[in-house]
Length: 122
Image (cartoon, rainbow, N blue to C red; front, side, top):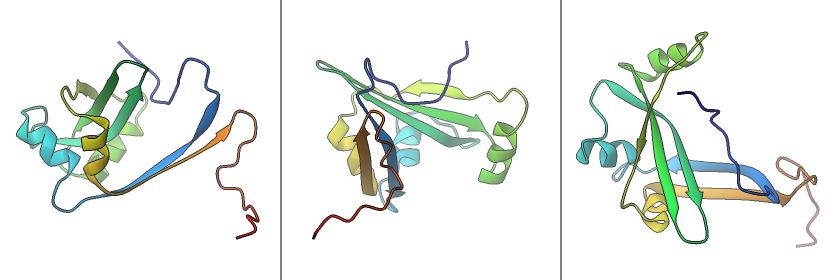
């Protein structure tokens, strides 16, 4: 089975970007290893978070590699593979807490504000 790694909501009224800084002490890699969802020969290469009105879903994408350079080379290949794991029982608050800093920027559809300099009168 294949899928496109991207964001999507039902209507995509708001679109944007996300950035996060890894926490040194509590990392997503450690959580996955502790839960038996990641082996030592796998690298976390992607994460998705989906929140609906009544539920949320958090997934990690893993690649068999010894280091980040090897994982990056694998993903640059003609038909890259990744193992997708669902992270059950992790709340959105707990997920965000796995990062030292977490930032989301969204603009209403069609305005494409991400990366645009705005004078905000502040």
